[in-house]
Length: 284
Ligand SMILES: C[S@@+](CC[C@H](N)C(=O)[O-])C[C@H]1O[C@@H](n2cnc3c(N)ncnc32)[C@H](O)[C@@H]1O
Image (tube, rainbow, N blue to C red):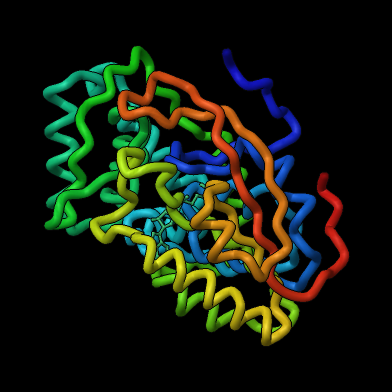
């Protein structure tokens, strides 16, 4: 069964595992008002695109993602037109896909690499983003009939990006850069629901349970500086434990969580708000 459409929200231009597009209606009302929204786990930027803060600090450890955001921010239409040239029927077959994937992994041309990242995102299996130990993108061909080129979504991103600074770095560094008056929305890779739920990895470094605990401690420290931090995660005993000092809300969501990406299950999600109880920005 498909989810009801959400016409009032802006769609990210990238497919991204764990993206929050479908649960924005639960997250946005929990975000306090502020001068700047800091997003240390950017992914496809669903929250950035659907909020209205004066400024944004957006970061992620994936260098391909941040490079792409910076180029699209700077160039807009000229980059969109350039990237669109890769979306042809001649490029939508297995042989061409692996040639272009090889070009992505070997090119030193930043603009070409950024365009190829969009091509791979729309032509690879389930839009996954996965690398081997040498940071080579290794997701296989996706066999889509006619992959969609997200021109309109990229244009929205380009406009919105004029309010943002994009940085490739670890969440600790980004949180430490948050200034008074900022609000942090942290959406780390999900804690696994069980040992076999590790269906994907976001970069060559795994975000393990130690990292999840470190994020919770970092959030507490930011809250002690007067900065509110909202964290998203699965609702499990582990997350309830590490976020026990936060104000918790929870909701259910239908999403793809099986290994083959075909089955949908209902997963419980948790939102943990650390810090001063501030007025909601009222997007709900
Ligand atoms: C669940 S996704 C974020 C999804 C995003 N909220 C959206 O709506 O698309 C988690 C992101 O965390 C990034 N990440 C993993 N480890 C990180 C780290 N140590 N510091 C910062 N970002 C990290 C991954 O590259 C991935 O893009």
